[in-house]
Length: 144
Image 1 (cartoon, rainbow, N blue to C red):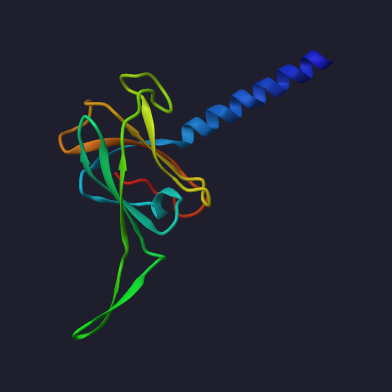
Image 2: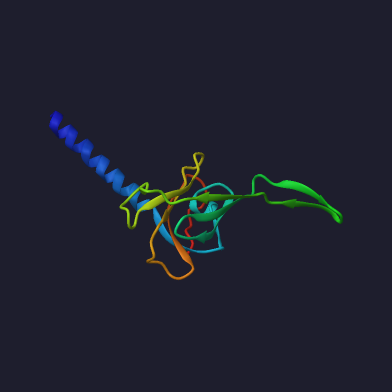
């Protein structure tokens, strides 16, 4: 009886693991084009991949929940704070092998959203391959 329970539990773990793997989506994201994180189940932010070279990937996070008011000569306007970040490819990827491995680029603890960068040349010109594991909030509508 104990062996049967262990087999059932192992089968459930395998099934749940395969369901979690199905949820992640691969996207070829154009450079310098905003990816809405709310469409991926994340917070009210946008991710813009600016540049990828042999040493690093440069990207920008725009947070629409943290607006800063700035007073201009003609009145008051709101400006979106932008935070530039750098991610250097590691010696060993977070997931996968050395040639086509995935590096964790961005994650949100609050929603559970994770975005991985795949270091590969098998993408159309001017795009980068991202793997998105959706979060628990938002619409989860992936871009085409």
